[in-house]
Amino acid sequence: SIGFALAWENASVEALLEQADRNMYLVKNQRSKTIS
Image (cartoon, rainbow, N blue to C red):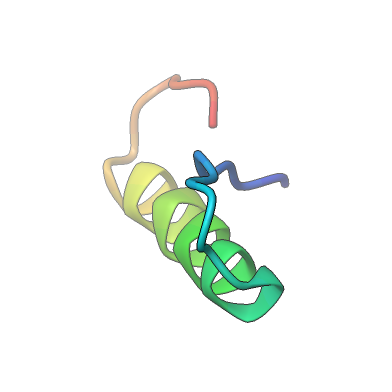
């Protein structure tokens, strides 16, 4: 599975990875066929 996150100019790598991880698990928990 892969998560995604949009980057703003001042976003740190850590913040992007955390947001991508959160997004991936949000979609996985929806239990529907959704692309993440």
